[in-house]
Length: 191
Image 1 (spheres, rainbow, N blue to C red):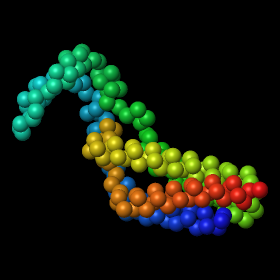
Image 2 (image 1 turned 120 degrees about the vertical axis):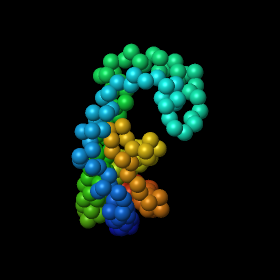
Image 3 (image 1 turned 30 degrees about the horizontal axis):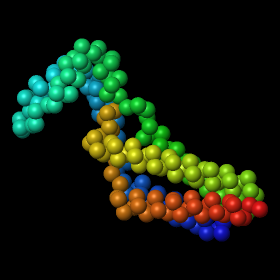
Image 4 (image 1 turned 90 degrees about the vertical axis):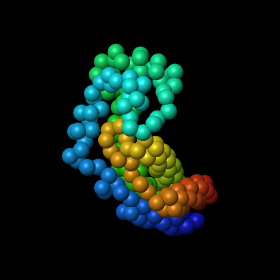
Protein backbone atom coordinates (compact mmCIF):
# COMPACT_ATOMS: atom_id res chain seq x y z
CA UNK A 1 0.00 0.00 0.00
CA UNK A 2 2.86 2.40 0.79
CA UNK A 3 4.31 1.73 -2.66
CA UNK A 4 0.97 2.57 -4.28
CA UNK A 5 0.91 5.88 -2.39
CA UNK A 6 4.49 6.51 -3.48
CA UNK A 7 3.54 5.90 -7.12
CA UNK A 8 0.53 8.23 -6.83
CA UNK A 9 2.71 10.82 -5.14
CA UNK A 10 5.24 10.64 -7.97
CA UNK A 11 2.44 10.85 -10.55
CA UNK A 12 1.05 13.92 -8.77
CA UNK A 13 4.50 15.50 -8.71
CA UNK A 14 4.95 14.79 -12.42
CA UNK A 15 1.58 16.31 -13.24
CA UNK A 16 2.43 19.35 -11.11
CA UNK A 17 5.80 19.76 -12.79
CA UNK A 18 4.20 19.53 -16.23
CA UNK A 19 1.59 22.03 -15.08
CA UNK A 20 4.32 24.48 -14.07
CA UNK A 21 6.25 24.00 -17.30
CA UNK A 22 3.21 24.61 -19.49
CA UNK A 23 1.96 27.63 -17.50
CA UNK A 24 2.98 31.22 -18.02
CA UNK A 25 4.71 31.55 -14.63
CA UNK A 26 8.13 32.01 -16.20
CA UNK A 27 6.78 34.91 -18.26
CA UNK A 28 4.39 36.25 -15.63
CA UNK A 29 6.59 38.79 -13.87
CA UNK A 30 8.27 41.46 -15.94
CA UNK A 31 10.97 42.94 -13.70
CA UNK A 32 10.97 46.38 -15.33
CA UNK A 33 7.25 46.95 -14.84
CA UNK A 34 7.13 46.29 -11.09
CA UNK A 35 8.37 49.75 -9.88
CA UNK A 36 6.05 51.58 -12.26
CA UNK A 37 3.06 49.59 -11.03
CA UNK A 38 4.00 50.27 -7.41
CA UNK A 39 4.34 53.99 -8.07
CA UNK A 40 0.95 54.19 -9.76
CA UNK A 41 -0.71 52.30 -6.90
CA UNK A 42 0.61 54.85 -4.40
CA UNK A 43 -0.97 57.85 -6.16
CA UNK A 44 -4.09 59.17 -4.42
CA UNK A 45 -7.47 58.66 -5.98
CA UNK A 46 -8.84 62.20 -6.17
CA UNK A 47 -11.37 61.69 -8.95
CA UNK A 48 -14.81 60.61 -7.86
CA UNK A 49 -16.49 57.52 -9.24
CA UNK A 50 -19.09 59.62 -11.07
CA UNK A 51 -16.39 61.68 -12.81
CA UNK A 52 -14.47 58.53 -13.73
CA UNK A 53 -17.59 56.97 -15.23
CA UNK A 54 -18.29 60.15 -17.21
CA UNK A 55 -14.75 60.20 -18.63
CA UNK A 56 -14.86 56.73 -20.15
CA UNK A 57 -15.40 56.50 -23.87
CA UNK A 58 -17.83 53.58 -23.73
CA UNK A 59 -21.16 54.05 -22.00
CA UNK A 60 -20.89 52.67 -18.49
CA UNK A 61 -23.68 52.07 -16.03
CA UNK A 62 -24.08 54.93 -13.58
CA UNK A 63 -22.45 54.37 -10.20
CA UNK A 64 -24.61 53.11 -7.39
CA UNK A 65 -25.41 55.22 -4.34
CA UNK A 66 -23.02 53.11 -2.31
CA UNK A 67 -20.15 53.75 -4.74
CA UNK A 68 -20.85 57.50 -4.73
CA UNK A 69 -20.89 57.59 -0.91
CA UNK A 70 -17.66 55.57 -0.76
CA UNK A 71 -15.94 57.88 -3.26
CA UNK A 72 -17.08 60.95 -1.32
CA UNK A 73 -15.78 59.46 1.92
CA UNK A 74 -12.47 58.31 0.39
CA UNK A 75 -11.56 61.58 -1.34
CA UNK A 76 -9.96 62.93 1.84
CA UNK A 77 -7.81 59.85 2.44
CA UNK A 78 -4.07 60.51 2.53
CA UNK A 79 -1.94 58.79 -0.14
CA UNK A 80 -0.57 56.30 2.38
CA UNK A 81 -4.06 55.11 3.29
CA UNK A 82 -5.09 54.89 -0.36
CA UNK A 83 -2.02 52.76 -1.10
CA UNK A 84 -2.68 50.57 1.95
CA UNK A 85 -6.28 49.97 0.84
CA UNK A 86 -5.19 48.82 -2.61
CA UNK A 87 -2.26 46.70 -1.38
CA UNK A 88 -2.67 42.92 -1.09
CA UNK A 89 -3.24 41.49 2.37
CA UNK A 90 -0.08 39.39 2.23
CA UNK A 91 2.27 41.07 -0.25
CA UNK A 92 4.27 38.10 -1.52
CA UNK A 93 1.68 35.39 -0.99
CA UNK A 94 1.72 33.99 -4.53
CA UNK A 95 5.52 33.94 -4.66
CA UNK A 96 5.66 32.24 -1.26
CA UNK A 97 3.13 29.62 -2.36
CA UNK A 98 5.00 29.01 -5.62
CA UNK A 99 7.98 27.99 -3.50
CA UNK A 100 6.29 26.35 -0.50
CA UNK A 101 3.87 24.05 -2.33
CA UNK A 102 6.54 22.12 -4.30
CA UNK A 103 9.02 22.31 -1.40
CA UNK A 104 6.59 20.70 1.05
CA UNK A 105 5.72 18.08 -1.57
CA UNK A 106 9.36 17.13 -2.11
CA UNK A 107 10.14 16.95 1.62
CA UNK A 108 6.96 14.93 2.22
CA UNK A 109 7.91 12.59 -0.60
CA UNK A 110 11.24 12.01 1.13
CA UNK A 111 9.53 11.14 4.41
CA UNK A 112 7.08 8.87 2.60
CA UNK A 113 9.97 7.13 0.84
CA UNK A 114 11.51 6.50 4.26
CA UNK A 115 8.19 5.17 5.51
CA UNK A 116 7.93 2.89 2.48
CA UNK A 117 11.31 1.32 3.24
CA UNK A 118 11.23 1.23 7.05
CA UNK A 119 7.48 1.25 7.94
CA UNK A 120 8.19 3.48 10.91
CA UNK A 121 4.95 4.98 12.12
CA UNK A 122 6.47 8.42 12.80
CA UNK A 123 7.75 8.72 9.23
CA UNK A 124 4.32 7.80 7.88
CA UNK A 125 2.51 10.40 9.96
CA UNK A 126 5.08 13.08 9.15
CA UNK A 127 4.65 12.24 5.46
CA UNK A 128 0.87 12.39 5.82
CA UNK A 129 1.11 15.74 7.62
CA UNK A 130 3.31 17.12 4.87
CA UNK A 131 1.00 15.89 2.11
CA UNK A 132 -1.90 17.53 3.96
CA UNK A 133 0.03 20.80 4.29
CA UNK A 134 0.99 20.55 0.61
CA UNK A 135 -2.66 20.12 -0.36
CA UNK A 136 -3.66 23.13 1.74
CA UNK A 137 -0.89 25.23 0.20
CA UNK A 138 -1.94 24.08 -3.26
CA UNK A 139 -5.57 25.03 -2.65
CA UNK A 140 -4.47 28.41 -1.32
CA UNK A 141 -2.26 28.95 -4.36
CA UNK A 142 -5.11 27.96 -6.67
CA UNK A 143 -7.46 30.38 -4.88
CA UNK A 144 -4.93 33.25 -5.05
CA UNK A 145 -4.39 32.63 -8.77
CA UNK A 146 -8.14 32.42 -9.42
CA UNK A 147 -8.72 35.72 -7.63
CA UNK A 148 -5.84 37.35 -9.51
CA UNK A 149 -7.25 36.08 -12.81
CA UNK A 150 -10.63 37.52 -11.88
CA UNK A 151 -9.05 40.92 -11.28
CA UNK A 152 -6.97 40.68 -14.50
CA UNK A 153 -3.75 40.83 -12.54
CA UNK A 154 -2.92 41.45 -8.93
CA UNK A 155 -2.68 44.84 -7.19
CA UNK A 156 1.11 44.62 -7.09
CA UNK A 157 1.28 44.61 -10.90
CA UNK A 158 1.81 40.90 -11.47
CA UNK A 159 -0.28 39.42 -14.27
CA UNK A 160 -2.38 36.45 -13.33
CA UNK A 161 -0.83 33.10 -14.20
CA UNK A 162 -2.74 30.83 -16.52
CA UNK A 163 -2.91 27.07 -16.14
CA UNK A 164 -4.59 24.40 -18.19
CA UNK A 165 -7.85 23.50 -16.47
CA UNK A 166 -7.49 19.85 -17.45
CA UNK A 167 -4.02 19.65 -15.90
CA UNK A 168 -5.18 21.40 -12.74
CA UNK A 169 -7.99 18.86 -12.38
CA UNK A 170 -5.58 15.97 -13.01
CA UNK A 171 -3.07 17.30 -10.48
CA UNK A 172 -5.75 18.04 -7.87
CA UNK A 173 -7.45 14.68 -8.33
CA UNK A 174 -4.20 12.78 -8.03
CA UNK A 175 -3.34 14.83 -4.94
CA UNK A 176 -6.69 13.97 -3.34
CA UNK A 177 -6.18 10.25 -4.01
CA UNK A 178 -2.64 10.50 -2.64
CA UNK A 179 -3.91 12.20 0.53
CA UNK A 180 -6.57 9.57 1.19
CA UNK A 181 -4.25 6.65 0.44
CA UNK A 182 -1.49 8.15 2.61
CA UNK A 183 -3.89 8.38 5.55
CA UNK A 184 -5.04 4.79 5.06
CA UNK A 185 -1.50 3.50 4.67
CA UNK A 186 -0.27 5.37 7.74
CA UNK A 187 -3.15 3.93 9.76
CA UNK A 188 -2.85 0.35 8.48
CA UNK A 189 0.87 -0.14 7.94
CA UNK A 190 2.17 1.77 10.92
CA UNK A 191 1.09 -0.90 13.41
